[in-house]
Length: 142
Length: 142
DNA sequence: ATAATGTAGACTTCGTGACTCCACAATATG
DNA sequence: CATATTGTGGAGTCACGAAGTCTACATTAT
Image 1 (tube, chains in turn orange, brown, purple, green):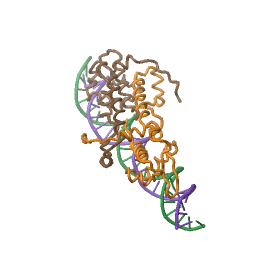
Image 2 (image 1 turned 180 degrees about the horizontal axis):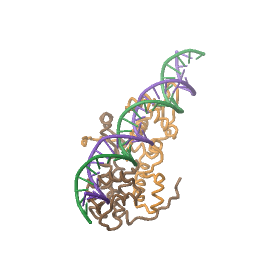
Image 3 (image 1 turned 30 degrees about the horizontal axis):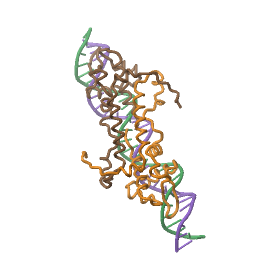
Image 4 (image 1 turned 90 degrees about the vertical axis):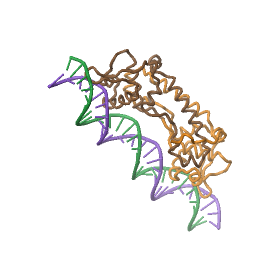
């Protein structure tokens, strides 16, 4: 029930790329600016490329660009590119139990939570995040 | 971002106990009826006892009972008894990055999701789950 | 005294998140 | 064309935590 570092890295990279209208961002630059291990970032970017969120160019002067406008990329896209389909419970894994207890009192709740989560993710675009960007004060460091 | 088996076990055990107004449910019974490994259930129950959700009695005829009415126990209580404080992002682990980027465009989103999740969990009591209990059809098994 | 229960906690296993490494492919530029 | 610069693909490593096991022990009803 936690946001993984990988997802965080992906979001950070994409918001970084959406920040200014530059043609290309090299892995090196993103890695350095966002403090993401270069080799790990490579893996993440590959997934974003494969899922069609960014375009890549190899060779000198190469790098990555967003394939769509920041307002056309929402967090759900990013989430699913990195983590796969959003699913809070995996009833398939518990088939035996689920079949025995045809009435599962929990499912509706997890479903409701999942739906509300998906909605928020879908409603939040890169652009929103860039605009919303406000100073966060860390007074609850502990 | 998934419900753990442990949490599922806890919820199932508690709904089972809230089902009928019986004085005591032995671990053996719960384990058997809900198909939860006995030894593992033991660990889970200890946490629920420690957190004050159930009361235990040792010796023959012993077992567990809910400490409160089903309508007084909500899912947030259960969640936190098992998983600890609800927190989608651990900014403390990423202190360095957070300090460098005082403006974190993602935080507000995760926060919104977390808040809505907490609200739903809080609003859902054991009683709700027992009432809501409806037959679930598994047509999306895959 | 004994059997039936829960308690405490060490130990094991396995999967996965978070990396690292290296060989390789594409391509801009001199 | 040679070379340097960039991304690609995939194997390998490490640590941690979820899930589960085991064993010794404490409590208490009969």
